[in-house]
Length: 271
Image 1 (tube, rainbow, N blue to C red):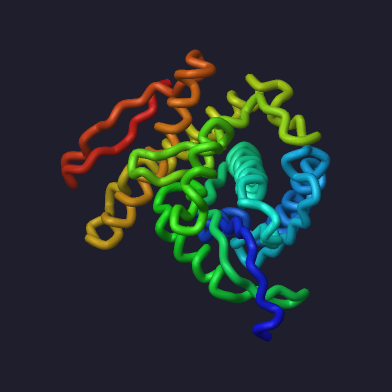
Image 2 (cartoon, rainbow, N blue to C red):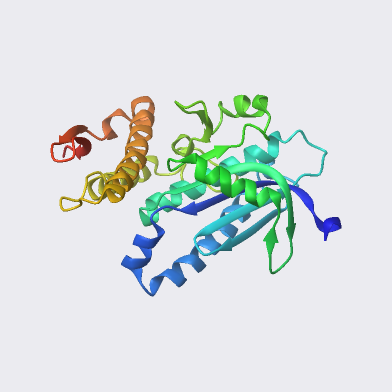
């Protein structure tokens, strides 16, 4: 088995709020998962003609609400093109999930060893990717600074990567709206249409998850709600930052309102 272990660049993410999505969709979930495997293959197929993706063999795996795309490390590259390719792919995933399903994802891009065949995927690299996903905290794809060179992250900041307030590098998925990624012109055409749909979906999510349940008293549930609200506050902040630069008229007006019973802030969207 050790002879089959190889080093890969690994992009891993899972769906936030999957249980709630399952409860809402019921029997549609299986079709949803099948559709998203097809989505992954479609994104890769559309983008492989771009020089960014040339000569890369993508491996796509999914299980339950988790997805993985891997590129073998051939030791003939410093990793720049692999990380760039995975960052673009993750950005496309994030935009499609948000626009089509009102769903956010969280994950990581890292590097490590893995064993892969038709039935299973395991190894230290996968364990690392999962651990990094949990560390990401907000609905973002973070880049593993311990395994991906800082110079690569800095160079990609001019593309679709940014440095967050906590000094973590993450895939800045809003940044590719208006860009043609490979032959996938999906988000470069009708830019305003995409921004409007993303705006509507972001507002929907904030209205749904930006407040505490009025009847909740359990401390653990209150803490969980606080974490949830922070995730959607992050999304709202990043969306508005994008709009401030590229589309001011589409910004979402909101205010933070103190919920007196819990003495915690909630997000209120202004129509």
